[in-house]
Structures are given as structure tokens and as C-alpha cells.
Image (cartoon, rainbow, N blue to C red):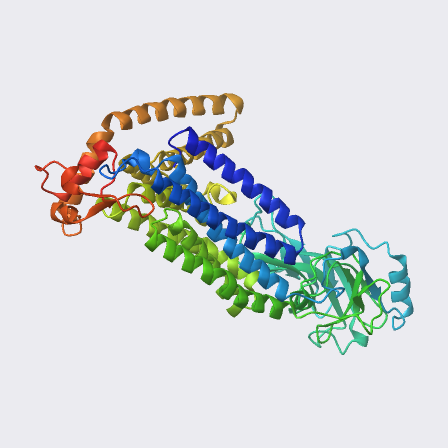
Length: 602
């Protein structure tokens, strides 16, 4: 892929040009962006075709088959790049068209004009103490106020925030939950709500008897509720949401919705709990996609008896006429319609173009664009059928990239062992697939991006299924990128070893110095051994393929019946007899010869 100076400059030029057009598209509006992207795709298709025809015209002669070096020349790489980027640009233009056709009306409370939005609160219905509390606007410092609640009857009960020392965050601090102590009995965990805070006294005489109708008082507090929780407190994939809850000393009830930044509680004279928050409830945010924070501007009140929350605030556009301004937007419906239209205008064209150019012209980048199209199709389907797609998409893609890249990698290796793929096609697909596999496995196994790096089994697994296989595949196929990726993984191992030594023994600079020095010398020696025995390893693999995959290996008869075509559908062909010695009898020997000559066998 980068075999000479011309190829390197082709890559650099393609990257710079695409950065320039990406900047221009991001600066423009959706309509102009669609036009620019579509024109860009057309220009790339035309330019690729012109260079392709020029390559055919300057072919050396009609009797010589281009060698691998010729078929991977800078011109061929440039044509592959142009076709690949053109197909992606075609998909982007279709996606921008869907964004332009379906969007929220301008000047709605869900548009992007943040500076024009204000939060309006109706204070006329507030009791006197609530109006004084609201007018102060100072609010209480986040997390301040009482950390416990006391119920003197019917039993002397204390509810409080605390930790038993068994759960810790990734920063090493203990996680607190709601505990209670009744009389002389030992403390017991009362709720799975995390970080309870601001315990506020509520007089049940004015709120339908409280949450349990058993006591004359209640305590309400703010806490964090974990959705899809696991045993680990530092799970980065656990969804956390701020909520408000109340207890009568024996039971705990929490509000059904989420209230980001809930704080500054007031037990009012009307028996309700008033509090401030930074955003609308999650249901209203999902309907309108309001992502901006209005720090402490939203006022809510909680009926402790029913746990129903009333909003006393709304968003409006400053200086607008409320009767003419659209009050909301069905953002979820807009996203669903965008996804459906994107399948038609973006995903289908990308997949169709990839299949056509890959099958008809043998463009080496088309497997990559096909994979991008299938991934985009997966995301679009999730958006259409899943209500909470914002949380589902990252989880699905985590497994999608890991599993599909693993299957693709195995398929490429099988095709290589059976001589059924050209080396230039293999180069693009294997390097791209190896990179996706390497990154997706790191994300899936959570090494080394999170606190899970303390789990020894994760490091063992990532080496067995990721680092070592990539090195082995790179050595067998002679693709240096895969070896580099595996070496990066071994560097992560060295960092982890140094980190463990520092944590348990102490020291810092000298430990890492010795660990990295020893690891560097070891990797250098290991690389020398691989280079020395690489041919022997390749021969052993070719013998294994000939023994166990002989029914799939493309043997001598099949090769004699096939032809080598000039790149980009040239008409000049030559039979395998012109390039292969007569004494070769098996597909394994053909594979071995190709590895020696560094030439493709079609």
C-alpha cells in the first residue's frame, strides 16, 4: 500500500484534500454541504476513471503481465483511493440530504440557538416560603445540607449515607448508599440508590399521610440511580441518572424520571418538596433533544404521597411570540425518518457501488467501503427500531466491530491460504480489518482504557486473541502493519508490568526505565528471531494448508485454466504456464513459490 515514494505522496495528497473538503462542508449549511459533497463525489469518480484509462493506455506491451510491484504502483493506489473516497462521499451526500429534508422547525425550543433560550418559571402559585426560597436564587452548594434523617418513632431509626468499604470508584474513593440503623440492631442496607444527599424533613400531615401512611414524618433526598447496573461500581457502560427519593424509615420510593443536577431541596409549608435542577426531565429531553444546561433554573415540586413531580418551569425563546412559535419538535420521529431516508439515499448507494466496482473492476478498496456501508446500515436499523438508540448504538457497535472484523480476518486468511485472493486486494482488506480488529478488541475487553486494567484475565485474553495473533498473521502474510499493531500491544503489556511493580513495590522512574529497557531488548531479539525463521514459518504454514485445505486450495489445473488480467480490466492476459515452472504439483507449492517471489497467484 505504501511501497514507494509516489504511493506515499498519493496518500498524503488524498488525506490533505479530504481534510480541506471536510472543513468546507462543516462550514457550509446542510443544503450547500449536500451539493458540495455530491459534486466532490462526481469529480472523484471522473478523475479515477481518467487515471484508470491512462494506466491502461501506458501499459508496457501486450505480452508482459504486470508484476506485483507494478500492480501496486502509485497510480493503482491512487485509483483505489479515489474510488474509495468517491463512494464514501456519495454516502455522505445522501446522509446530508436526509438531514436537510427532516429537521426540527427553526426557532423551536429544540434548535441550536442556545443564547436566545430562557427558562420561565410561574411563581404565582408558590406558597410564601417557596417564593422567598425561589427569589433568593443563591441555592445551596451541591451536596451540602444534612447527611442523615432521624425517626424517633415507632422505633428509633436513623437513615444515613454510608459505605461498608466493599465498593469503590475507579478513583479509589468508597461509594456511599442508603443505610439505616434501628435501635441497637446492626446497620442494614436500605436501598441500591447511590450517593444519597441533602436529607430534607417533610411534614406528612399536609401530604396525604406520607409515602407509607405509617409515620408523621418523611425524609426526602437526592441520589443516583443506576440503570443496567453490575457488581462493579466503576463500570463505564452503566447509565447513571440523578433522581429524588423519599423514605419513611421503613420503605424507600424514588421518582420515576431523571432530574439532572437536582439540588437545593426545600420542605415547603404545603407538604411538598421543592428543588432545582439543570435540565428538563429525561422524557421531555428525549422528545425534544434539549442538551443544554440551565444551571439550577428549572423548579420542580414533589408530592411525597404519590411521588409525582410537577414542573413549574418551561423553556421559551426570548422575544418570540409564543402563539406563533412552535413549542416543541418530535425529535424522535425526526431521527427515525432521517434513518429511514438515509438507508435509501446513503447506505444503499454505498453498498451497491461497492459491490459493483468490486465485482466488475476489482477495485481493491471496495471491501472497505462495503464494510462501512454495512456498519451504517446497522446503525440506521437500530435508530429506526429502538426507542433509546443513543445508549443502544454504542453497545451494539462495540460487539459489531469486534465480531465482524474477526470473521472478516478469518475469511481473508482462508482466502490467502487457498490462493483465492490477489495480494493487492488482500493488502487493503487485511490492513484495514486488522486495524478495526485491534481497536475493537481493546474496547470490548476494556484494556487499557478503564479501571478494568486491574483484571489479570483481561490482559491474558487480549494477548491470546489480539496481540499475538496479529503478529503471527503479519509474519505469515508479510504485512508489516499487523506486526506493528501486535508490537503496540506488547508495549501495553510492558506498561502494565511496570505499573504493577510501582503499585506493589514503589519507585517510579527507575522501574519504568528497567522494564522498558528489558522489554525493548526482548522485542528486538524476538524480531530478529522472527526475521530469521520467517521463511521456515511460511513453509510450515504452506505445508499445513496443502495437507488440510487441499480440497480448497487453487491447484495447478485451476491456475492453468485461469489468466492473469492487467489491472483495471486491461485486455492483456497471459496463462499461468508462462510464469509457473512445470514441476509444481500442488497448490501449497504454488503458495510457497508466490511467497518467495512476492507475486500474486490469481
